[in-house]
Length: 338
Image 1 (cartoon, rainbow, N blue to C red):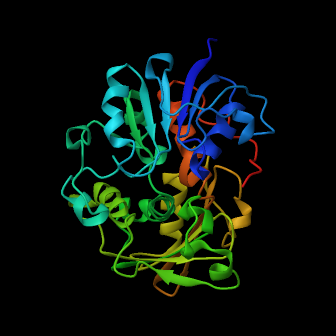
Image 2 (cartoon, rainbow, N blue to C red; image 1 turned 90 degrees about the horizontal axis):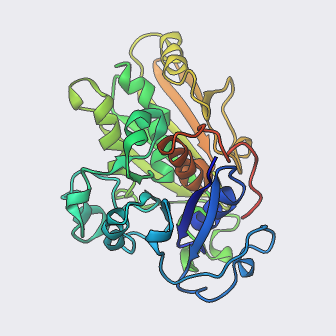
């Protein structure tokens, strides 16, 4: 089988570096370009000394030399480039938030600016395979969801689709520090976060509208439950743990059966009998979910790795679907860094 020529744009951030490590071992992929403005002109081994891959970082991708571009650029940095990439016949797996929300009116609220290419929002497919596998097969632009929203959507989708949510939902979400990216800042400084946990974005996290959008699409009548979404920073490198609370319609056994049925045959999302720890899924593309209750209050817990299933691993999973490859290709072994 001919190798698929892939580019990673923004290969020096955590999502980009994770994508490179995954694609370098993918049996059907040839990495032809890595881009990074800060590393342009340097060899790939400058950033990836352990990879058996050779090349020099470019400043910008050349889409005419590729079949797929994994865009790991910051929000609104890659948005203006995507149209040109698509015009060159390249499929784009976008890791930023540029194309996740279908309503362009939401971008000024959550990202403080108008969307630069609103005409592409209807063309993008939300890259959550458990919900949109068939659409991803035909997509040329896939918008990979955020790490927090991936965990929360997977934690709540079966309950909402089955009509078993009897109240507002509270999502208590916790993330490792790598979720903030690789750029140095006071908020992720070791001395600030070590031996401390704190809540942030109490007025609302930008992954919240992704959660509302996707759950509304599953709910009867298109009206999902109201959601309180609260995020916390935990002094660990990687991992997401979401604990979701809502009043339960019906017995717990009915809720558990709804989750088993919803995720039957899914290679990376599964139910576990005990509440999961983030270490269970660290460096993997798995999301594990536990469904429990206190009386009539359902407690659904989901854990995933924010850099793999919450970012680049899910991007590779979407790539596999779009190119007709096994969903697990390149994703079955653990990653080691960061």
